[in-house]
Image (cartoon, rainbow, N blue to C red; front, top):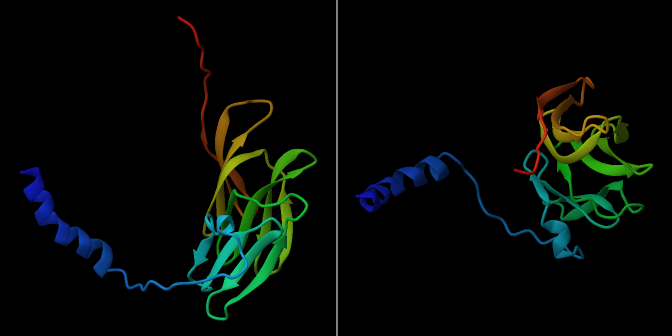
Length: 168
């Protein structure tokens, strides 16, 4: 009976996912860029571009013009794997004096700023707010933090308290 129910539900599931979305698949070739640089690339619909990271920096490939442009150079540290991007922002983690800090590139003003954070991992970007995992040196407990990039306001989203003990 489960298989029959699944068989009957498939057309409704397809309609829910595909009929409401109007999209086309387009083949895009970005010349002279290694495949591993494109694995974590992000397509930005608002600007019709693909943003990716290489050993020399972050690039935006304009799909219509078929041109790549350098957004930010990272040649001193190499390829960055943990980043988030939108039409307005590019956010990534990079060491500053051996401490990982969040860097923010404003795509309208072309300015890079370094946030005074205890960054650890996992940058996500939603509108003008970043979400990331922080490990405060004095507290070792992981904390999910948010920062509004327009206002600079930060807040704790969730703190994981407690400790784990091994043994009987």
